[in-house]
Length: 230
Image (cartoon, rainbow, N blue to C red; front, side, top):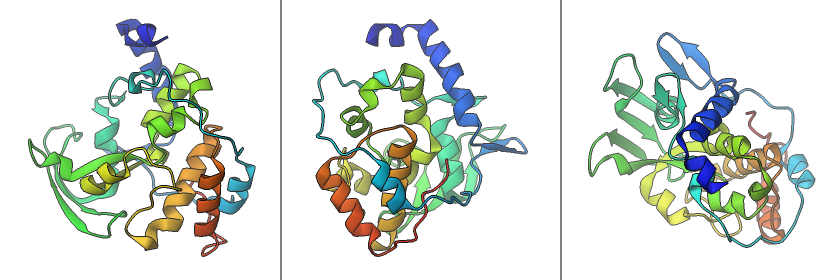
């Protein structure tokens, strides 16, 4: 499967298949393809958590990010990374026309509560990184091995599972789950956990016992928290 994914024809197929899934959650605004404001959900995070299977972590054997996506996906003339920057940054300037590549912007970082000035370039772009809220290798060990290739591609590029965040915090998180890492900004814990639950619920992934308990502890402080829709 790994070899077939790396062939140009297979990659094109999976890009086209998953692009329609991703695009369904996006809207056009002029020349920009941007994510809509988070629609209200009716599903409580603690209810969704109760529906997630609890299992042990599977072996990491065979894991390769290329089994999900060979880099960021393309939708139209732009890429997923820049869509997320467009969604999460303010005071944006553009590097290209039609508007796609973000040159500069300001991130009100949810993980640290810091204001970060993004400037595209060598040595500066990494100040703002795109985090997979449910880490890719974590997903692999908790059910994604059983997903088909198009679903894994969709998971990797799904705006529901992506946030622009402080680069240092993202590196510290690495592939941790909620039992091992939560954002330094405690005010974001409920939203962070609810988003992880939403992603795992959507892609039929499981949680470990320790992960479940960590999520449940966070949600005790926000029992009416709804999962984001995506």
